[in-house]
Amino acid sequence: TFEGAGSVYSLEKNKIVSIPTKNIKPHPLNSSIYSSVRYGEDEELKLSIERDGLLEPLAVFKEGSNYTLLSGHRRFKVIQSLKWEYVDCRIIDNDFDVIKLIQFNKYREKTIIEKRSELRELKNYLKSLTQKQRSRLLEGVKFQDFIYNETGLNRQTNFHLDFVEENDKELFEDVSLGKISPSKAYEIVKSKLNGEDIQYDSTMSDVKRKIKSLSGVIPREKWIDLINDIYD
Image 1 (cartoon, rainbow, N blue to C red):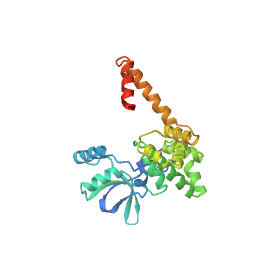
Image 2: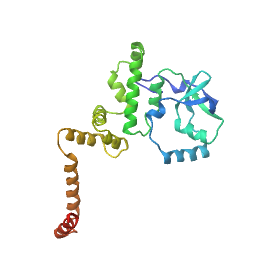
Image 3: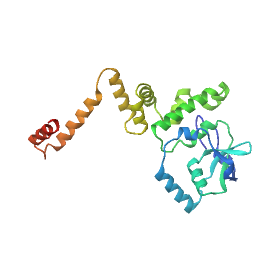
Image 4: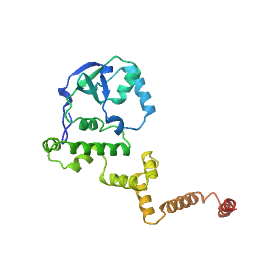
């Protein structure tokens, strides 16, 4: 059972049934939120399912004659590749389906960008609810506190991401790829806008630290010879 604000369902109350895989479709928001590729993990998952079967049922809700997947998208992809005709699923209701999708992924390893995507989708979804529905869901918790708690993204990091994306698309791409942290990217962009060159200062600092770490084995004149050779 999920407890606290946003606890909109109890797993123990839902029955498990075998469903044709052809009648199951991924949740439409899953691929847009959880976009990172995990080839190594997926291969390990496939070997595990081939060896031991499906240890935990998928979680789905009924939608017409078909079912929408809420939990187990990576497992379902493996099952499709193995050409299973049926798979065990836990049937839950479709109330607050976006909340459930995010809650089911609460403890998975996520990138900063995935957490931010969760936050944006969660914010849009809550705004689409009626006041009565929001009150039932939040249980007295403030709107902003709820979305940051559910996604695990703090306010400062989200502010840094928004700032970098708005002012430097190329650097934001580096953040998305994990090449640089949101806070570092924020400082770089902020310094550029203020007419400073934080990248130059950071680079020089890194070079100084490296030279200092090697000062015991490389004499001063060797560094001078190297610099002269580079600039000649």
